Amino acid sequence: MNDKNICDDPCPIARCLAFLGDAWSLLILRDAHFGLTRFDQFRKNLGIGPAILTRRLATLTAEGLLEKRLYSERPPREEYVLTAAGRDFLPVLFTMGAWGRQYRGEGRLVRILDAETGAEIRPVLVDEVTGIKIGNRPIRIVEPDGD
Image: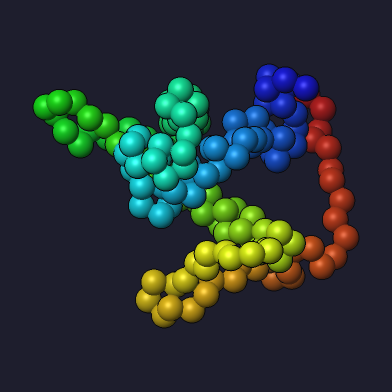
């Protein structure tokens, strides 16, 4: 399945994976949430090659999760900052991290703490309509109506 086929898929998970499907994009978003904004910061922290980083930043910018902002006019330099869509991705990252802690948690792991209280953040996803924890009841998938 190629990216075009995934983008046409009615499943929103498949559509997200069409551009977020690799680890680098997710790690760039993680680092952006932790305050990194500049190309060299991402490159150094991730140990990613410049060509790959350039492509991932371009995709995340084109998809509206990051935006470029000029931080120096001479010489011209840009940084990457989270958009509203990028900020809204934080719960997804935290949920992935909680799953990773539970099922892939061997060895030393960083902890994510609330900056004000110092308490460890332990995300829980609940259905907004019912208030029931997601994962505790059966689900069904409904195909979209035909055109």
